[in-house]
Amino acid sequence: MNGFLVIRNGLLLSMAVVALTACASDNDDLDQYINEVKARPGGFIEPLPEITPYEVFTYVADAEKFRSPFVPDTPQVNASGAGRGPRPDPDRSPEFLEGFPLDTLRMVGTLDISETMYGLVQTSDGLIHRVVPGNYMGQNDGRITEITESEIDLVEIISDGIGGYIERDAAISLSD
Image (tube, rainbow, N blue to C red; front, side, top):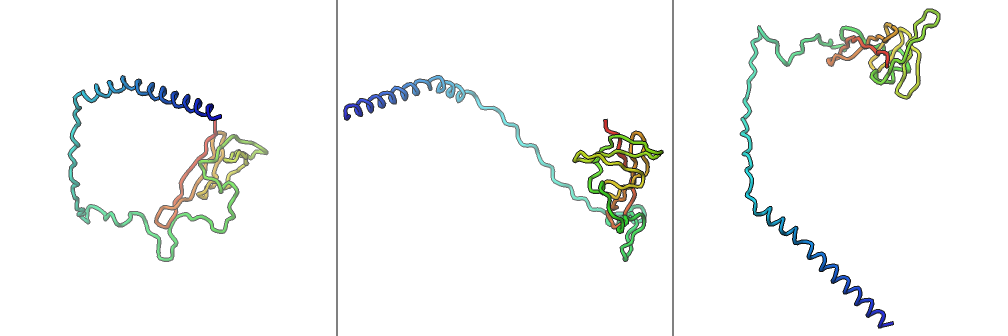
């Protein structure tokens, strides 16, 4: 048994020596290439661009010609919080299609039943819903004003950013 172990260990040792010797001779072409690259002259690096300093500007407005940039040019909400213009109806129950952003709704067709034009709207979950003028859809209180063969017209009530609301026209066109 001891003779077998000695022979086996001797074979393993001789194979390891042969393998390491073979690896050492493969590096000659690599060493030659590294020496060639090191012998090449260095390249030129362009200097960094010059940074121009920031010029300070002091705003001095002629009160007769220009308005102050710190005062809004639209009418403000009065102290009671009631601004001018349209307002969403807080007592109205929201309809199902108001739970979807308007850009995720697609018009897929129309349906004319008993002289009533219905619009067919597909939601992002793939379901198709019938709508008529007066229905609401979209997340900005979009009320449908007209349905044609090619589009559904709406009027949305959106915030003007200073406490009031404005009306904005929107439409959903028939999808191809």
